[in-house]
Image (cartoon, rainbow, N blue to C red; front, side, top):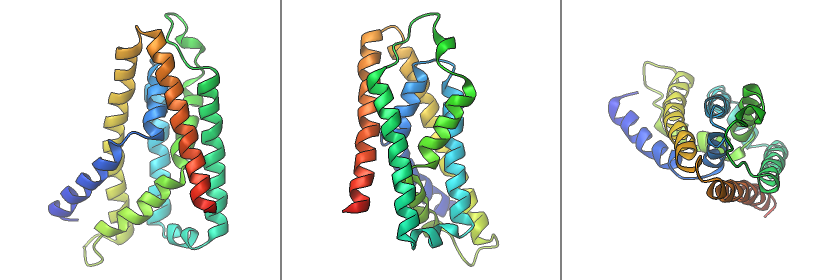
Length: 204
């Protein structure tokens, strides 16, 4: 993979990363709980890594050609996002000093983060459509290794942006409980809208 290809891929990838979506909403939610940002982001990055490995292994093309599997994957991801969004709407996190320890374990936030990305068909389809376009079958590296390398570059961009989003959410909203609750509800709405959109697109 040459430098020009890497630069082009990073530019396209970064445009997707800086676009607010479900990952942003989850990073903000984790940010309102302070120490939960790192495990939450680690979980989301693990989900991205899983999608990268699936595509690199060639399973992505097989799954994409099997509507039943893609439909099931979409439904599982959409239902999970609906559940997360409904929870945020029902009980928005308002940062109150001394209550961060009641936010749930770091492992729980990690698993949720993995599910947010790993069960989101948009992530899988993005990698399936994007990564192969920047691979070179004539490169000294095998195509699967190139795809994994590109996926890692995307993950690094995601990690940097999501950490900034999460920690800034805590810094900017930590002293504004009302604003934090409103933003958390908006995050919940975003998750639910994305989930409904996924279902609508699959059955349209």
